[in-house]
Image 1: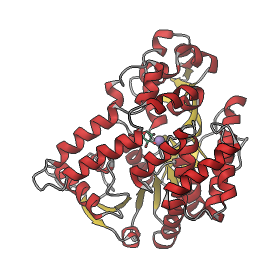
Image 2: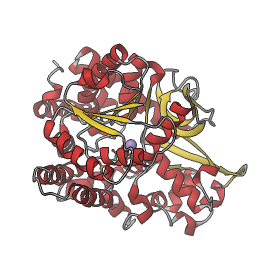
Image 3: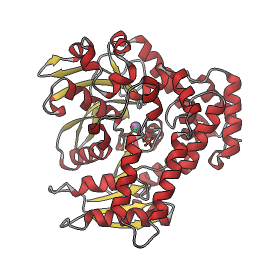
Image 4: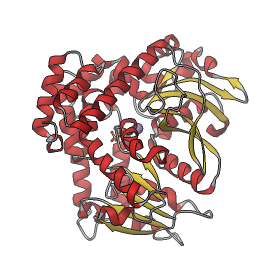
Length: 446
Ligand code: G6P
Ligand code: MN
């Protein structure tokens, strides 16, 4: 079984490889091909993987290449985790937006639109190549903004592209734990929305919805990440637990202010941190795995720090620091490769699940996964306030896809202007000016 990782020089690749190393079963991945545009990043990550595999018998073989077509040929699975424009691009997304007083987060609001506008053309090119060179492969998309990018690729790959995110999985795991489920797998989580824009409306253990018990108990609500971020009162008013990224919507003013006042934006912080790591990897005597793990721990500990600060949420729970990103990917791959039926929250085409959206809209929803792919499960309808947000943000995503397709600057302005977190058409116009001035990847917007 051959797995190709696009963005193979990326910092999170050792997480995926570490998960593969734990898989001893029949039909496991035996060959990993790393693809990246940058040789030195490939070299750095390959060093970490080599140390991870040192004492593991039959570790998956790793090769690296900068030739995309070569990487795709013969792949059974393709993970796409690329970052168009790099972390400097992410920092610019934040800077330009914050200067206009709006959010520059990489997936939410103006920043997510800018990032989407430069990522979609690259993702579409990849999808076209996959359709030609590896038509039977499954493409697992990690690339943010994950819902939008998955939808762009689905126009060429249909249901063979599946988007993943660890946020809903982490949320489900946290609530299940708080409610006393021995194993999160025994809980059925009623979650739906778009990527980074979804709500848990129920959590059934042994056939009983336990969410009302959680919502009624301020101590339980104060004991996990989303409870601390949103506060017990607001969660009770909503009657649901939102994905952590909804903090940027419900507490937008505070989030923007905190990000404006921070010493460095998240992208700028990570750009410096990662530059140090990749630099260190050039030294022949560097302890690659130790350096990677130290860098990873620091990254995890500071995740969403400004949001947690405005909410007075304190430090992250130790249990939340190990992510889960790689576990979702591996679980998905195993379910497909071995026909091991499982349920996972994934980004797939709607197919009638949310009646307020068309069948091709990619949404985030629990899916049954087997050798035939991921099949969305019927869920209860969203309340109006959530449907409203989902529909406006999906409309914005469609404008991004249209702008990427046509190269129309007016359509790009429309995408920004229609976003609920961008409060004026004039701001949208200036954002397009600002972003096209700093991003070479937006030169196509004539
Ligand atoms: C979560 C999100 C991912 C995102 C990551 C960002 O896991 O679900 O979509 O890539 O956080 O973390 P970062 O360390 O890059 O700010
Ligand atoms: Mn995500």
